[in-house]
Amino acid sequence: MMAALAIVSILTLAGFSMIRSSRSHARQAATDLLESMIEQARVTAITSRSQVILAIVEPRNFTAHDTQYRLGIVKVESWPEDGVITGTLLNRWKNLETGVVLIGGEVNGLQNLLDSKPIEIECSNIKIKRMMVHAIAFNSRGGLQYPPGSAPLVVCITEGSHRNGRPVPDHRANANTATKNEIKICRVSSRCYRLN
Image (cartoon, rainbow, N blue to C red; front, side, top):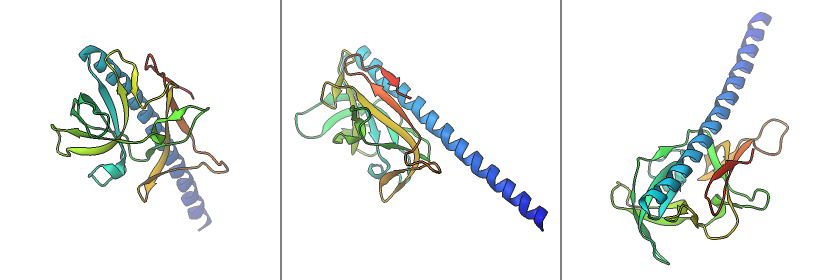
């Protein structure tokens, strides 16, 4: 009986270790995907000489009823002062893996994208015509147009889940903060850099 309990406890510990490792890999994969999508949106804005949005859709704003964030690149057709921004989705939605959330909060005094007001976009070429998104908008020269301001932006990616429509980061044992990756997006060049 003691041997069976020892084997079960060893397997349980190994299972928890594997789950923690896979979530860490999911966070890293999400960071890589977000960085590449930021660069792709910036290059698309420059080459098409138009305004382009990297749209980040929170799970509660998407009709799939799952817990995954969606990323899409939208070429802007009109950007009114107030109202709905119209455009065309240039690629299929890319999903961040389950178990990864984007969280708000300033980082070293820099504005977090998730703290900015979401905008409403309408794309005629997709099933869901209108939705609220967090947007990183690039002008035709590749500079950041939205959110407004002069300081760089930050996006924080961490392991966690969605509860009641809100992201809830996972905290490591004996730690008050979640392990997270932070991406800084410069305002003029729109290049992104990892802060950690």
